[in-house]
Structures are given as C-alpha cells and as structure tokens.
Image (cartoon, rainbow, N blue to C red):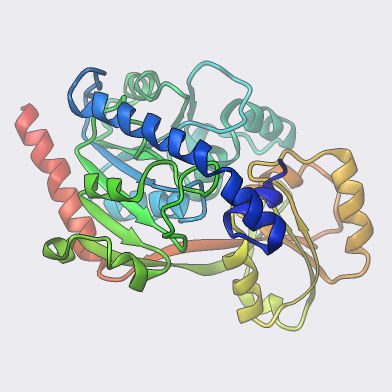
Length: 364
C-alpha cells in the first residue's frame, strides 16, 4: 500500500478508505495486544533495559510521524546548550545502509556534495539534517546503546543524551519521557490507524507536549498533572539553499506572491503547505513522496519539467539534503526551515535540566 493510500485509510477518506479501515480492525486488535504484552514485559523487568552512563531524555510519541519530534529534539538540544549542558542526540537513522554506529560531528562534516551522498546513505536524512543544518552531535544506529558508548569514547564531556523517537524504544532506560501528542487523537492502532500503541499508554510520560488537537487531548491527560502539559507549534524560520559549498539564508518574504512548486517527502506536509500560504506564496504544483524518500534521476526529471512553470521550488529541510546533488537553477531550490515554539518552554527546560543535574549528583 502506498504511503498516501495509508493516510487515506487512517483518515477514512471516501467509501474505500472507510471500508478498508473497518476490514483492518482485527489486525489492529492483534497489534495492540502484542504492543501491550511487550510493554508489560519491560515494566515487570522480564525484558531488561540498559542504563547509559549519562542521563537520557526520551522524546517520542504514540503515532507514526507528524507530531514534530525532530524539531522538538533540536529545540531542546539548543535550549539545554544555553543552560550550559552539552548534549548529543541518539537517532535510529531510517533507511540508512550502514549497519555500524555512525557519529556525526558538525566540525567534521565535509562540504563536498559527493561525501554528502555517502553521509546520507550511512546516517539517514534526519540525523544528517540535525548535524548539517543545526550543528548538533548525533549518534546514529538501531542499537542506541552502542551509539551512545561510541559517542562517549570520542567525547566524554557529554552531559546527557536526547533519545529521538524513543517512547517505544524501551531497551534504553530513560530519566525523562517527553511525549508529543499531535493532531490525531483517535487512538486507532496500526494498521487501521496511525497509533503505535494504545492511547492510554500516554500515562507513561513524565511531560507532554501537545502539538495539535489540544482540546481533544485534554480529555485524556491526567488533570492532576496539568503543570506537566505544554503546547508547541511549528513556526517557519527562514529559507535556505546550498551554493558555493555553504548554506545561504533568505527571509520568508521571498515567498510573497511567488509561484511555487512544493516537494515534500515527509509524514504529514500540511504544516509545510500552511506556512507557505501564510507568507502568501502561491502553490501552483505539488509533488508528494513517501517519508524518507530517496530521490532518483526520474524524480529529478519530473521536478525539472514542472519547475519551468514556477518561480521557486520549495522543499523541506530533510528533503533538500537529498536534492542538492541534482542540478537546479541557482537559488531556485529552497528549503523552508521550521522551529518548535513551546509556550512556557522555559519551565520545561528548567525542569529537564534539573533532572539531568540530579542524575549526575546521584552518580557521583
């Protein structure tokens, strides 16, 4: 089933989407049972979790994509850095070819596009984006423990780890679970819906960041812990392009009244489109690809053909790293950079920084 068809089933679009969603209910019940058994084994210690040598903050969610995990990781890493803490991000690195842990250190990344292709294959698009565009140190690998130990071998000054997409990755013990809650709060478990585990499991969280459907989520969050609930919104920052071995930044006003072809290979591009519309960009053509899509020469040919009719090609931060290897007219290919904005975020950051420092005191 193609990615867009899956989304159509989850959103019950039309008769076919509704029917297929109903037919998938038995599979969802089975998936839910397996997920709960697995969680029970971890909770009772029948499956062991590993304690890393540094405190761990997990950022995760209940659903498949679309809640803003990566922007939240970047926001938190930046805020903790301002608190004087040195953090590194642990990421799985989807669709990468390398099986061994890969360590991305911004100061050691090459400006050579040929090496960029190798780094994409070895690390995956999101980890490379975090390192290249946001100067974050990232350990990449399915085995987060090995990645963390390799990071510490290279830099023992790291104060804490941020576990990207870590809510279901219970093999690593965490000191804090920050759970993101997005626009879908239906609770329908895979494959009939986008939930990776039942909605009630949000109770495992220590803090919650609501990035969509806030009014609906309030019904499922514990009222006695309202001080641990925060709201976040993705905000556009600027536009970037790659030229002469460096990143160039442009203001969002460049979008104003421009005819735009959008290219999106992310889980949910709705916020991406909305941001362009808010800055009065005119989206005249749209190309959507599956999340973590690897662009081919055939894709480039289609993009180039459609680009003749527009002023700008606007894509996402994740996608531009995979598209800059193809020839485009100078400054025509741009990426919209976004950042997470958290209401009352200083309270959340202070609480997390205190947990990190408390964990260090307990170790010493």
